[in-house]
Image (cartoon, rainbow, N blue to C red; front, side, top):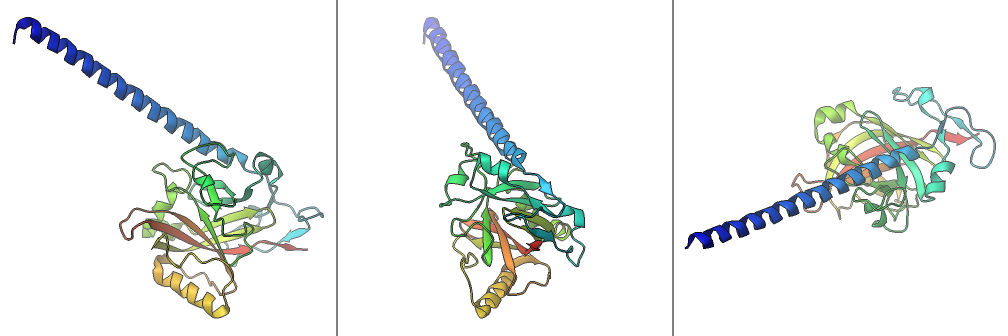
Amino acid sequence: MSLVTQKKAKRVLTVLLSAVLCCVVVFCSILLFREREDSIAGNSQMTLKPPIIRDTPAPGPARDRTLLDPLPDGTFAPNELGYMDFSSAREVNEEIVAWLTLYGVGIDYPVCHTTNNEFYLRNTAEKKPSSRGALFMDARNHGDLSEQNTFIHGHNLNNPQMFGKLKRFAEQNYFDSHSAGVLYTVGNTFSLQIYAVCYVNSNDPIYVFGQESPQERTEYLDKVKSKAVYYREVGVIPDDSLVLLSTCSYTGRFSDERLILVCLARPQLTPA
């Protein structure tokens, strides 16, 4: 190969390498930009949090209520409960039906409900496109916690947003030290006692909707206990309602795996 040909080949190689490097830089910049935009979109959902009214609500439609006593185990102090005024949040999105807080976990987000389980996988609670999505009640639920089981879904992200922190419940110590939460709905406030961690397939019969007979309910609660990798006794009975937090999981136990955090939900407001 002549010296001239070698120089031309080097120039061509240099140009190609420079082009590849530029493409890599542009691609990484786009990924970082999208990550930043998604992070902002995820954090902005927390700013929708409605005010919590800790005094006895004033009389009126859906407001004539009084606070119940705290739970016997002292999980909640009296000033931690109240009702939530969703009017401002629902001006942004009328499909916001609840607000979920898990104490000490860092989950503090609105919960949406619509007619399908796809929209909020790719859109925020403000209905803005985002790969982080939003927390949402299963479309098969009514959206008001009137059923025995209410499922709330959210992405298991690598960062702490949405249900990314639920993976911490894979450790016994974390489960033992985090047991409480609250779910505010448009019409009531529910204390949450986290009592089981389960890993299941996405088609597992733990996903039960509608009303069960007393015998079916007892069998269901036994099934939850048998599937749990961690479990604590909280006095759950067939008449109790459950809130089940469901997210993707990648431990390899099942194909299309889900991590489910099972919570006993008890209403804290009652008609006066």
